[in-house]
Length: 492
Image 1 (cartoon, rainbow, N blue to C red):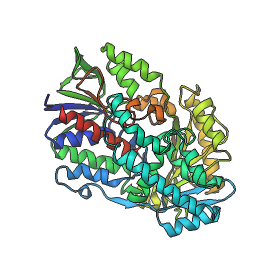
Image 2 (cartoon, rainbow, N blue to C red):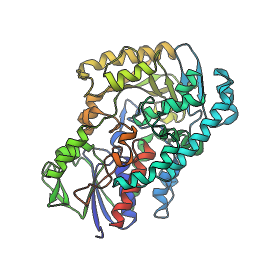
Image 3 (tube, one colour):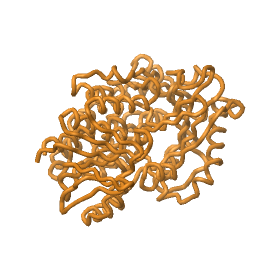
């Protein structure tokens, strides 16, 4: 069946990328978004002259974004300016050790030598391994939908050759011996919701992705990339409806017929795609579909990624010595990860990702000021049952105290504005199941065919895009899922 019209629920990165692909191919596409701005998890707040991105803030694989404009012969630079970030990350441990991660080999070898000179050769071998899993796991499979088990079996031999059953941390440990370097080379899975101790070694491909494509930031903030995508979609003739929450995805028999908005308006279409939370979509939006309720039960049994606690703050002063991205490791690595992913304990210690965009783009704060956020991974609400609204001021102070202790001693005196975002906010604002920040946890048994399928098994014109589908979370992941889903939809 040729699709002439489509409606997409949710204007996150995945929904917008899918919308651009469909509209570029001549499909009349409408995107409906519950919030007042597009972006989903990449929302934005403007307070007291400061611009605060909700995230994600690490942009990699820029060519996958540029391709969205090239489909219609346009240039992404018309709408978005990407600025290089270097070092990619500065990693810092409680004993004062710092490590700058970059794709400049001379600088990187010097950083490794500071930790353990013997690991320079091991890192080179790890990089070769990373290139191999990048080729097999990303270039060959990252934009292909897995709709049946046979497709998974065909990919299995190559994945097995790279020991996909081992964890990223275990594979890194095979190549390098210094514990700090092991942490430096394995923490990346946290950026897509995965535990380095259990996430498949295939995710080591992130290193190759970063080395080849670099790490970037959108001038004006990640929200400007979202706005550029929305602008391009509308330029192509697409329709973006904001403040338009969906009450239901409508079905008749085994077909999706469109959506009904909360106000009662119906939008009909040949196909429907959801960029919304998987459980919310299946359990609530498809409440009238028996097959969807069965799917919801299966999905609810799966493991979901943890949540996040973020403190956004604008402060007096500029900090050229604090790079754009920092990881402030806590005193524990394996133990903290076990608390977050397994026991569901809200630990007294934590590790932080610190985002400092004004060192790259000073326009995100008033002159002489800086914008930051500090992010701590925390258990999702299915593992830690606590009153997050009551915990906010406690967590907020502890996190700011730690940033002050390690980087900005008089931080509390410098703060102009601040606010925090907790697991309960992910659940309220995004319909995120258990407040998860990344949807399904990216373990091997929840990858490719074992994730939510890009096309529903029982409703053939119902599609999915975003972090819960193949290939997974992160900007390259959700943009890749849009490519896989668009191919299914356009081939009919």
